Image (cartoon, rainbow over all chains, first blue to last red; front, top):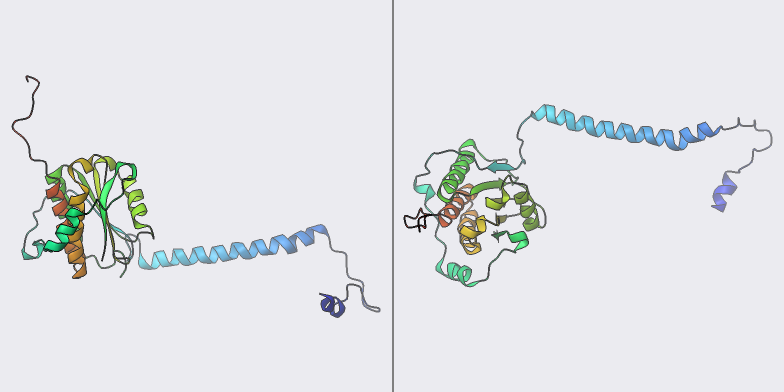
Length: 115
Length: 131
């Protein structure tokens, strides 16, 4: 700090022109106005990027969007691919002998699994 | 792998069929969510379930493929006909398919299994007003 003060003296050296007085409005513009403009420009750039991306890939579902199912189609599933995979006897015993795997939050139930 | 990036129309329709069959069998409302969850997947699933139209009678199957998490949530009334043990068995069925790489097939099997487990056969010997 002292070095800075010594390098940049806070007085007008002899022979230099006297600087014009700074009004409070100019101080406000420098300390508040300019940062505000920079922030607004940054937001505008980010928003424009999102809008351009949206217009580029189009409206509607995009990759990464969650998929919901729960409709009312009446078709019948069939085919060999729909055969239920077997749960091992040991795994079934463990499940049936274990306490419930879900919490009882607000009366809800269910189960959890990871793979 | 992202959330729903590789779901083909036939896979989507397979899930729709499975939920429809399960709903017809059980009289409950089934919702399947395939997408990103949060770190506490159970809490997230409960929140999603709470946002359903009729959470009391709804069964939510949440599958986050990127985190390899499966959550089944049953509402208060749905739990009366679909026990946690049935859910755990269906989850095990689904998991065995997921491990084999068949996520959509596992979900379809598991959902129909849940519907079968919650099946409420009509009784011919119920009490009537005359009793």
